[in-house]
Length: 535
Image (cartoon, helix red, strand yellow):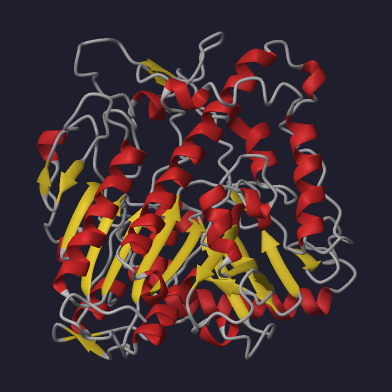
């Protein structure tokens, strides 16, 4: 292993955790995509790709979970960042959790974050005078264990003029012409690596991109690389990705691709295909710039001679996003932020308006999100596979058989235990004089070392009334639509694309799993979503 500036060989690895936002299972090259992601592909060749990694279906619950090793309700973020007056749904990290940054800093690590926070309560972008970072209901990275943070406190916004942009707890503005938030996150991550290395101590760096979350914003020169590539439509993209996934070994060939989502019309019925091609072109450009940033981060590790001393982890916070930005909707209008030069921002997916520039604010919608989530059903927000399946790549010097695939069922609650295990840092029973909720995940180190490849475990989900439990090969799942709908039961070994509902054929198994879920929900304070909304 390389030496530190002090000449000492580090006993513990550096850790770089990279998370992207609203990216589907098949959106990067090594997971079947046509979008070139050479840097992530290189990461996978030197590490392990996981085929059954799960998140929490939505951005802030996943972020709370990945940082604490808890189910999001246990950390206080069972819903989004709105405070519903219940401990499990208060919308910000509570005092009974300890973050990965807090635990590692107590263990001697330097801790840094570049990017999106979204674990600290609501920030109304229309009322910056009311923003109060660091108060008891608005914890920030620097109040929850990070030595330094650059990035956004809220959930999203313009890539050219991001709201709630701050350095530590001081609000800042974009600092140069041609500013692009994805590039800025990468710039500061690279700077932080150099700064951390100079201290001669192991470091933890959390890189939280907003790409490719809407709005569809990307520099024009990058978008042009992809214009015309999607003129064949979403069905062609889905078919090609499915075939590549099967050939890669990430998917069992016996799992058929799910039918095109009912909300997605046949490509032949689309009147303005040029606009649809442009939507996906901008989305691809957003991923392109993110991958280039990952390349610069990996390059900095190489330049400093510390790549072999560093664990690098990459994943997404939820599946591809189906949301249509309707200019007539109040919630879309609430996202509007003024442009510095006084131009009017054109909100929503307006007919005939090409996405990409800073005065537009659009999404790529359900048909392309359905392609992002190939081969699975549904999207971000739901807890069917399309909402919760994510790529996971881990590169670490102790990885056995680099370039391999691990089929172990895993969850973002496993990230904290894995990092602490690699670092040799214990999980505390108390932190800052407060009792700490025991971590719920397990270390993935045995899988990285190939001491195990598969095992049976039980995992749970609840997000805004969408429910699921997975126990070994069985998954029970239900959708919320004003009320939670009927349970569906799937055999994930035979049918991971969730096409053959066995709830009626195996009622005893469905009842068994439903009872498990009910006991888990009670234990963490999760309640029916109708009760949360009734407050």
